[in-house]
Amino acid sequence: MKIGIFDSGLGGLIIARAIRKIMPKYDYVYFGDTKRLPYGNKSHEAIFEFTREAVEHLFRKENCVIVIIACNTASARALRQIQQEYLTKNFTERRVLGVLIPIAEESSKYKKVGVIATLGTVASNAWEIEIKKINKNVKVLQNPAPMLATLIEEGENKLAKPFLLKYLKPFANKKLDALVLGCTHYPALKKEIRKLLPKNVKIISQDEIIPKKLKEYLAKHQEIALKLSKNKSMEILVTDKTQNMGHLVKKWFGKAKVKVLS
Image (tube, rainbow, N blue to C red; front, top):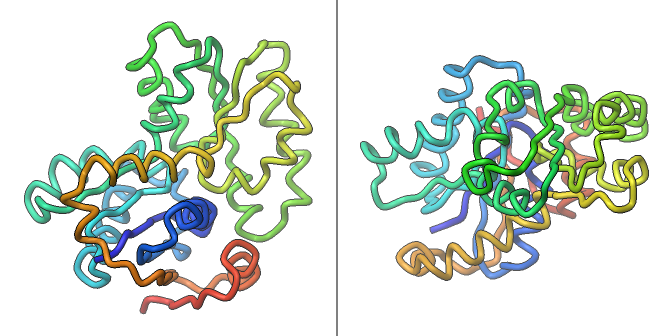
């Protein structure tokens, strides 16, 4: 059985690459819902339905025993319902994990934390809720960055600077201790973001944290780990062949083949 990784687009490939780097022996399936990207401006009902469809495909068609929802919007607005309703009725021995809690755990170590994320994730207030569950004394400042994921999907990183300046401006003079990159796409702009922040501000990036947390989870949950096959395979599935897809896949994953789901 395999590890599934789901994202609304191709940004989650950054997370998938990082996971595979520290756990290369397993078999992976990546599912990018490129046809319906972005999720950030969709309704709660739509996000849940899209996420459920992706998880069901990964379980039924791709033989995954565990799925990582790399999409922050889906993690914020659909994960709990997937876990509490969908899994308990359909797949009691399989697991679906999100990316918010591991990042919230890291964020809880700081006094004042900024978050940039999609409109949907910011509107859900999920980051502040999860961080304060761990440490109620953390001050959380959030700002939506709606254009970044689209620019990254289109391979237009060079055009991101004026948007980054706009999205980071509300944090100026706030004396942040850390900034959360609250979307799986954003690590692609980590270097650009680093240049625009004071040197003492820690950047909390999902590609650096999620792989370690998943490795720890599998070590603790042998009932899942022992079911995983070890052929070092990687499949990439998408719902639509986007114009810049080939470039992004090559950049982040070398010669991996991409299959478009009909």
